[in-house]
Amino acid sequence: MNVLIVLAHPERASFNGGLVNIAEERLRSAGHDVEIDDLYQENFDPVERASHYAERADERYFAPLTEQRAHYERGPLPADVQREIARLEWADLVIFQFPLWWHAQPAILKGWFDRVLVYGGLYSGSRRYDRGHFRGKQAICSVTTGSPEQAFMPFGRAGNMVEWLWPIHSSLYYVGFEVLAPQVSYGIQGGGIRYQDEDLFLDHLENAKQAWASRLPGLGQEPSIPFSGWDDWDEQGVLKPAHPMRWRP
Image 1 (cartoon, rainbow, N blue to C red):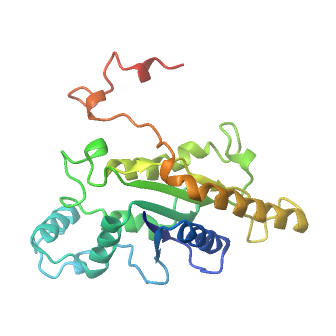
Image 2 (cartoon, helix red, strand yellow; image 1 turned 90 degrees about the vertical axis):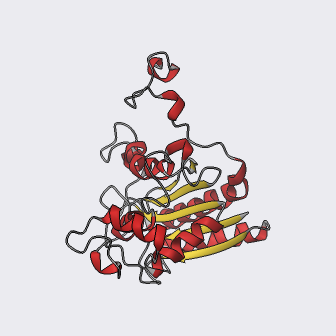
């Protein structure tokens, strides 16, 4: 299996970077090919802008989707975008490793979605969801948080983690990925905030690393998060009245 690890953390020696090292080691030892895509170290530009496109489809007005489609079809897409797309095409499994910042992924990773998942190439009106470009490939988010797990429960002060990760999970499914349940490492405190004594905190970090290491070998066999698809919706894109998901408690 080809595994791409997309790291979105500015410090390679961080806990997030350590989780990348664990994933690389465990997956390689299991016989998989692994490539690390460190967005910060590679100076990936997360901002979509007109200057990325040398030969504009419309010189008067910058419409990002128009330029993405035109440059995918007749070229050239920006070199960094071409590189990222090639990595995605190579991968069977994509691991996104990032901290939860302000209830979402870091800006560099959000910009990666904006620029790399190009309209007309990796999705279109008819190539989305379970008909998406990357159907048959898997993706998983490995996420760290500062607050403890209890804070991210449905009635916790930080809100339900399922809801915070819904946008990125939905985006991955939008382009066809089979999205696995996330690996969330809670309570990776920093910046002067402390929830437990130092010794307990170090034990907590080791337990989080071990939980990730233990899960990694079986990722390829895990079931994906269930999403509804084209056959489940009516012509307006609404879940059909007889669909069982409408009647779950």
